[in-house]
Every structure is written in C-alpha cells, then in structure tokens.
Amino acid sequence: MAAWGERLAGVRGVLLDISGVLYDGGEDGGTPIPGSVEAVARLKRSQLKVRFCTNDSQKSRRELVGLLQRQGFDISEGEVTSPAPATSLILKERGLRPHLLIHDGVRSEFDQIDTSNPNCVVIADAGEGFSYQNMNKAFRVLMDLEKPVLISLGKGRYYKETSGLMLDVGAYMKALEYACGIEAEVVGKPSPEYFQLALKEMGVEAHEAIMIGDDIVGDVGGAQRCGMRALQVRTGKFRPSDEQHPEVKADGYVDNLAEAVDLLLRHAVQ
Amino acid sequence: MAAWGERLAGVRGVLLDISGVLYDGGEDGGTPIPGSVEAVARLKRSQLKVRFCTNDSQKSRRELVGLLQRQGFDISEGEVTSPAPATSLILKERGLRPHLLIHDGVRSEFDQIDTSNPNCVVIADAGEGFSYQNMNKAFRVLMDLEKPVLISLGKGRYYKETSGLMLDVGAYMKALEYACGIEAEVVGKPSPEYFQLALKEMGVEAHEAIMIGDDIVGDVGGAQRCGMRALQVRTGKFRPSDEQHPEVKADGYVDNLAEAVDLLLRHAVQ
Image (spheres, rainbow over the protein chains, first blue to last red):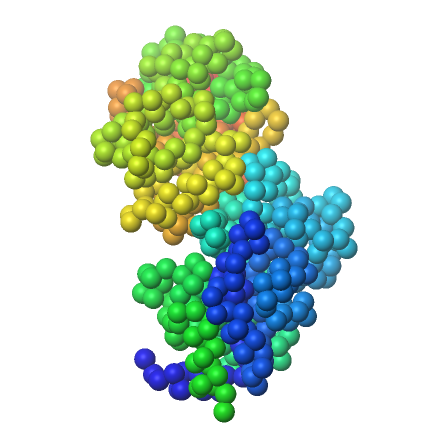
C-alpha cells in the first residue's frame, strides 16, 4: 500500500460516522470510544472541514447531539447529516403520506408530515418497536397499495452497543422487501444521494473528502463508490475479517479515530 | 390450454396444501373453506392416493390434525408431511443442537432434541414470538458461530388468516440471512427434498402426482420443478395477479378445492 502521505494528499474535508467511531451506543446512552473526544476537538481546530454523517435513525438530531455533547464532544446540530430530516424533506417534496414504523425517539422529526391515509411506509431503526404486530401492520399497508413504496432510513445489517451486536433496520427492510416482492428506497449510507448531500452541506468535492467509519460496506464501500477515500477504524462493529473483505478495500485501516486524526493532521494538512 | 382430460391423465396421487386450501387459519382456530370438507372426503373415497403437505410450522402435527378433525376433515397424523418432524430428523442425523426461534405450539416436536450450547439456529413461523429481542438473540447466536447454520421451516412470504394477511417465516429468514451474510437451509415447500419426502411417504412417482395449493411460487412452482403437476386454487392467499405470474404457470386454476376434486374425479380416475 502507498505511503500515508500519498493516500491522504489533497484531503480538505472529513466525514465522520458517529456510532462505533465517536462512541458505542447503549441503553445508558453509551460511552465515548477512548481518544475520540480529543480527536474530534483536534480535527475541528485544524484547517480540515468536518461533517458528521450518521445512519442513526433511533434518535432525533437534537437528541443525538445532546447525548454526544454530554459525553464531551464538540458537535452541533448544524454539523450533522442524519437520515430522518433528509427523509422528511423527500416526503414533503413527493407528497407522500407515510405509515411510520420508527422509534419514538425520532418521531419529532416527522411532526410536520401528514400521516393520514398512508400511501407509503417509512421504516427506521425501531428497535423493540419491530414487534411482529408492527411489522405485520406495515406489511399490510404496503400490500394494500397499488404501487407499494417503502422508504428505509439506512440499510445497515447490525451495529454494536455496549451490550453486544444489535440487528439494524436493514434486516427488517429485507423482510418487507421479500414479503411484498418490492425494493426499498434507502435514505442513508451507502446511498450515493445521501453522501452527496453530506458533501454539499460540508462544501467539499468528493475527491477532496475522506470518510471515517466502522462499517466496511456502508461507510467505506459507499463513500468510495462516490469518489471519496475512506478509512475503516478497528472500533465499533469492526471485525478482523473486514480487512479481507471480498469486495471492499479501505484506503487504510486504523485502530481508532485518534489514530486516523493523527495521520490526517500529519499528512493531509500542509 | 389443453383439455382437462389431457392435463390430468395418469394422476395417481394428490398432494394437498392445508392452509388456504382446506381452511383459513385464525385466532379462533380458523374456518373451513366452503366445500373443502366434502371434497377431501370424496377424494379419500376414490382410487387416488392423498397426502397433506403443509408448511405450517406454528403447530405440532398432532395439534394441526386435531384442529382439522374438529372442523370435520377426514385426516390423520400419519397422512401429513409437516416441516417440524422433518427438521427434527435432520437435526438428529447431523448432530445439530439448535437455538429454537419457534412458536410454543410446535415446541413438542423438538422435545427429544438437545438444545444446549447451540451450534445452529432453527426458525419457524413464530408469530408474535418474532419480537426484536428474540430475533436479536437468534442473530447473536449465529454471529458467534464460526460457520453459522440457519435452518428455516419453510420460506413463505405470507399467508392468510381470517383477520387478513400475515407475515410468514420467510420474511424473518431473509432478515437473518441479510444480517449475517449467510443463506438458510429450507425445510418445507418449495424445497425439492421436502416434496420428494411427501411423494415417498405417499408412494407415488412425481409424474403421477399433482399438487393443489394456494401459493403460486411455493406450492405450484415448487411442485412443478420436481416434475409434478400443480393446480392453484382461488382461495387462501390467491391473488388475481397470480394467474399472470412472470415465472410460474399452473397446470390449471380452479375456484377452490371442491372444483379441483370434481375435475380429478371426472378426468384422472378411470
């Protein structure tokens, strides 16, 4: 592999995944990953632009940012690209009235959306809300539509909490896709539209940006397909087998965000 | 389409799906489909061999047969091919110790199976048992195995109860397949091994047998791929669009089991 100086040349903007990179979530709010609070602070003091790009769809942007601030992170709502507000915008633009299968924590992002007489289904990481009854209700709404529209906030397979691995929304998206014989529209990583939204909000071109994430497919593969570079951290849901993934090869593997920021400050910033 | 006489020539054995053909299930035990009780009785009085071939994995064979007998059906346990006993046999043969994600109604079929220190996961139509917590538990068991083995009792997309359409085990199988990046082994229709088991138990060759079911893919397509003929009934989960299915064409479409039996007794029996 080329030297770090070559791999990181010309980087002007950094996209940071949140869960598994900044902190590991959990029932108690989770805990910061060692070194990440300081790493974010150092990054924000540098010339590099920073944007947080999450697939978290259990919490409103406000709730997520509040939780991270309490853990010591320097982060504000305006710096976060998050799938729920992006979906809310799409629903308004297309005149869609969703049946919502979502976590209560994110419901406030849809306050302005008409949910009467639904003509689509929106699913997010509903956690315990993914009961058989709720899944069956969403399924029946889709089957009653002439042209079923299913919008999924991300398509993650699983994520890591302090208690262990947790099934993510992607698994339930696949269940509904199969049952109804349809394909969902994904709002979130690795959808190219979603990465492009984050780049636009950061004001940086794809070739000048680097993604840092713990998901070899959703973060690393997705960002690379958009023309960005991407590093995988060995925290969060990282597994050693990720470094031999059959389809995706990161531009670099680092132990954690602290190491990634060390390298960026040494090699990307002139 | 050829005349019925030609299409049904040489049929010696009839495989009957149960749910959606004999009866529509429901919380109260469900209700027989009009004409089906008499149709089964007439078929059993004829020279044709009969076997019931179900994917029902919520109930033990004993419970299912008891329920159907109370509705007036002439049926006994020995006449039913059902996925739970077939799975139990496979587990024993291969020395597999399952983590069971199944309905309480079918648990007795696994009484003789060692479930300590699981080295595979078995899922069946768990209904309300498909909680997020139970799904996550099954997911974690699979992720902890070096070579995850997932056995699914059927892969149906949905079935019909008196209250409406119900998500079937196939949807949850897809969720776990996606989350773990694996492929499940299916015991049940449309798996060829399962149809062949039913044929063997009936003592009839595939080319002499006809399947009657409400599922265009699982019943009709599956049976045809095994060299059998197959009729679709317009009851149960049948939808008008099934008659224009892009991949599967039944050897005939009939309003219900009563019509199918009329045709068989008229054209197949000499």
